[in-house]
Image (cartoon, rainbow, N blue to C red; front, side, top):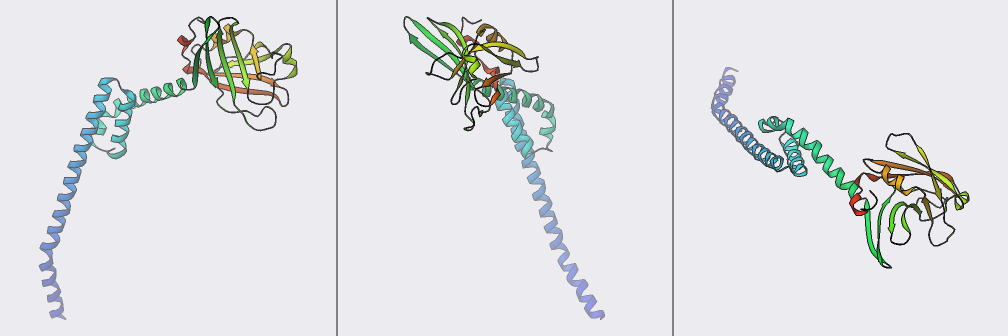
Length: 243
């Protein structure tokens, strides 16, 4: 028994230096990895700060996102945390601004002796106006050299209420402001499913500084529907005479 115990003791003593060597090697590897991570984090922070200095908030946000995703507990991340939150907010705002700007389409085409200009936007969500399924709804502002200025809704299917062939009204709501009634009419034509909002100047003015415009309109088949337009990206300079 004593012989076996002694043999085991000698074996453990013999293995002890090898264990210490492995522990030291692991510790050295961990330290090297930590140093490499801090260096990489410092480089990411430097790229972030360069983007901030240039005022490139979208790039600054991307660089900061990388830093905080890969090295969130690094010294570099802690140092730029407050600046990152500010850059992230500005970067998100820039991305949102580009998104809503891209919702609008503009056309300029010769008509007679002048130029027809238009700005158009689709509703945020398609609507079912006649039971045949959801279809796009569009809002258009048009400046025609002969017919003047107009604003109107366009349906792809179905139709507006029959009462609108004479005169009806739509309800317009801007952001959180109270809704307001506006006169409208459906021209007696089969060329397009369109309904004009009579006071186009007032409707245009309502888009200024607005984010969302909701227009509730009567349909022929399914009663009232509400089209939601994210109007905040309108480039007003495209229709220069309207302001």
